[in-house]
Image (cartoon, rainbow, N blue to C red):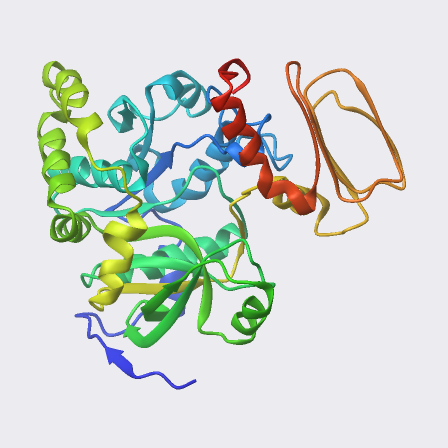
Length: 394
């Protein structure tokens, strides 16, 4: 499919490959990484809980939590002193324990969840007030990425595009016809010195059915939406102001008080609960795409949002359907002709015989048994427990 070309000229005259490789070794001077670390991950219950959400768990056998792995990916791009984490007050101790090098002023605490537009917007407002020309990149704390070097290339490409006033996202080149992810359709090409492959975003597409996903896989213009956004802070804030003035006004007022310890607490308690609860996709990404101000660069690395136990099983079995993935330091599992995943946080012996695509999650106070096919329905169990007042296991 042909695409019209939109050309942008830099002051520089190109980016030789050798110079680019040298640049990869050093952090980006004007870049600040932001890690939104919120959400419970209810489809991973009873492993993921309100007091121990999925970003605090090691779900890949790396020896580190997803949060720590995210930090380690971003440090070469920004430097350790330029990574901010937005998280709930209840998770502050756990975050600081896992990230002992994080400066205190880079821990941005929410009094309660207000969704991604408020979280990322607050970080943008605070960092813009501290450093007016800053470029920020938002990367979820609970995603799994393999291929760190390729990830770095994609982020550096996105930063170059963001310098030109675009909000840029990284779309993942699909490896299969996935029905669990949203998609981005690429439009007109952007030719930007220093960015190898960039395009305008034509539109966002909701999670498709299998047949539609197969057509997307065959069409190189469709990418998975991984929810990564790179932008000048002032550009992102301007988009919020245009589409949700109430949210923008609250964020700016909070940012003005943030670095004054005497003013911050009262301002958060007064303003934060009143902010509109909305995803950044709806208040920034989709409106910017409609205006031709949202760009995308492709990411040719392995990525997964670990949205349910089916994803977790696939992630830990290398995609082999007949394997049984086992998580848990002291897991005691006996299996015969079984496949799926077992997550054990007890010393109980678990025996599996002749079961396929099984999901077993064993914790001291709750046991989940389902199948990969029904993994998305776990959230319904969490909703039912809330309705019946069983918050003690949530």
